[in-house]
Amino acid sequence: MTFEVAPIAVVRSPRKDLRDDFWGKVDADIVLDEAFGEEAYFGLSDFSHVEVLFLMDRVDVAKIEKGARHPRERTDWPLVGIFAQRGKARPNRIGLTRATIVKVEGRVLTVRGLDAIDGTPVLDVKPWMSEFAPIGATRQPAWATELMQDYYKD
Image (tube, rainbow, N blue to C red; front, side, top):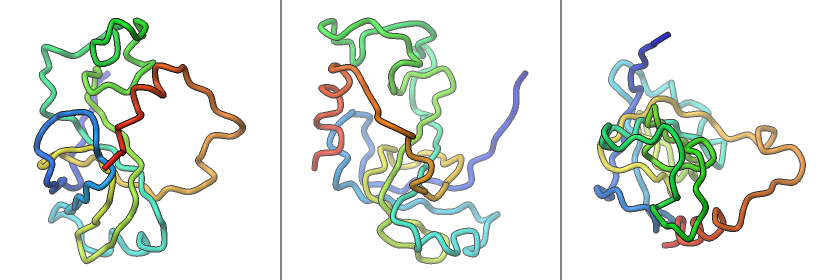
């Protein structure tokens, strides 16, 4: 089965490179497509965060992983399946990030901490609600904590 989705917006960001870390102070605009009026963002400023789904369209299709790999090619970290990590070389190249809402003005949503580069197509924006947080305690392996230590630093 196949299906099509169309972007609802585009990211405008000072970040143009695909490096992995230091997204903490990056402010980016999510500019709605002209098919949507500013009313599509009405009420969004009442929330502190959004989840943004986007297409990592600049990932080289030849480098997409369908099995397992060492995260960031670090052989000191375990070999793990692509669905046990959040790497960008995913089969459908879909990214998901929770970002802080800075402001909403018309058809422009400004967020902080969105790890999508300039020009990235946005597939959806959803308000973050506490009830969607994990129920109960969470756990993750040590390599994942080490991998993320600089991800949202300034």
